Image (cartoon, rainbow, N blue to C red; front, side, top):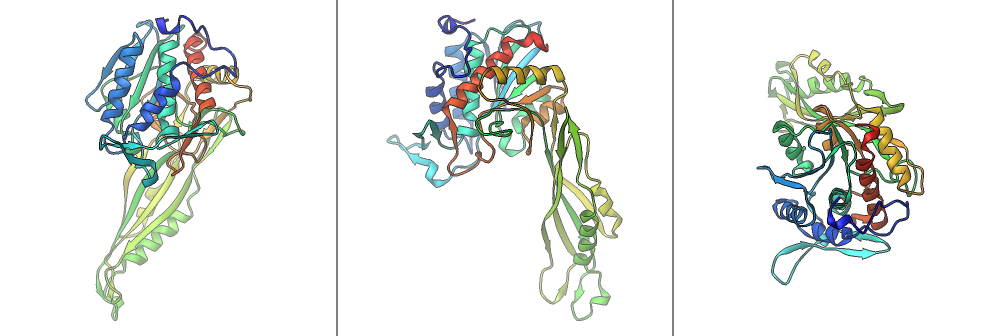
Length: 385
């Protein structure tokens, strides 16, 4: 327990007051632009951790920030987030008196508005405060904030390749208002995303003599018919159904109205589920068609029931609502961690549909709740570690 924690004690009630220092920290982090370069945001995180905690703080070559505290021989529980954001809308930026661009912050009705509030600097700040205040029991506590989550998990993947391998992780992506309004749930699974392309080739000729060529668009359409007949991937995680999807989203072929095309490309968006993929390779049964995978963001399934249950217990103790184990529809860095062997859950302040919007915001009350959840999980780690 640090000196900062001496007067606090355990933050027990579901309606406890604002966490000391959380709001100014959120405002500081959110105001720093980090859509093109997350360095300044990483600097602010690193500086705060050095000043406010006794943890061992590190920064890797990618710009990921880590802080570790507690028994070095115990299993590691990581509180994970990311400090890069998607590009802001014009209304979300302004130039300060110093000539530097800043993100615009607006506070009203118990919420903070601005790029990165929900996705996910608010939860990053809550995790930082939890690291500062928690007295972990049964686990070494680690904080990790990655770069490049919004561009395919660049930071998380690099960290894993460099040996980042916590036994457990609470990833602070959004899980609020999933089972019901005003409730912060615990995500035990999420879908992945596999983006792929069907490339159909043929033989060009003049459109007045189509029989002397091979129409690549026709081949592509035949391949699309194969895709149309494939079943969506689906599975069950801890009793929760997870159903993926499959959709052709783009088709591009031809160069002129009077030329039979010799190439056509078809884009496919597949939402994958743990352990199941659609057999898209079947499209290659059509002559002249090749299937190419362009991006594959892995799905996530929590691999440890006791950890998932302990996280849910912490969530229930930290709010007046009744949270549940739920499934998240899109990919996060938890997929990369789970794929590497970490037992993951997701719990965070962002509400469904809030991230990446021009009016992005986060509730102060829910950020306080997330702080309590993260701290409780750390201090009750003997329940699962």
